[in-house]
Image 1 (cartoon, rainbow, N blue to C red):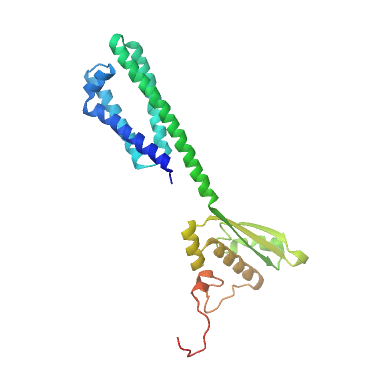
Image 2 (cartoon, rainbow, N blue to C red):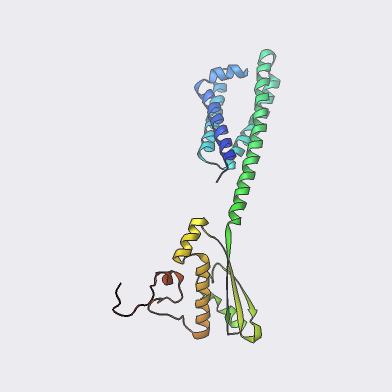
Length: 253
């Protein structure tokens, strides 16, 4: 999410772009006179095209908070400043003075646009880094009483996320008791709300990883997943969450 400062930049520069774009569309002849340009139809046509361009960028700035739209303003400036400078040199007298003021204005706007684009880009990068820091690391481990080569070769038999998303490592278990399997899963928690919901329902990535690695151990050591009427698919945190405590037959609710 964009910071308030970045939002203000987008809104301010977006409104500025709309104003700049509307002027040559509504009154191209007046804009040409103020800038010291010719009022001939070709010139007015160019001014209208510039107005449409400004309106497009202004709309983008107001509709989104992506730094790309600020850099689009910078790209416009890179085109406009040299063009205005060349036009100024070709003018003389009062027209040159007016065009020189326009060029100075464009240079100032360019400096402001570059500063705004850099600031917004840094803000967006910081927000992305913050989002990455919110990624949570889940870990699970079991000891399987088989040789490492066999455990490693049968890893594709494991259920997701163990077989598809987690980073799995193998090491000899202490005392020659088989192979220790460790799994690490980097995954977003969905924020505080998602984390709370996952903890209640048993669907958070950590519980899913633990269930998968336990079922993998059962398959390799016994040839099947331990199942029951309450958990027909085997070890499952979501299923366990829904189960009730055992009660004597005929007990009152």
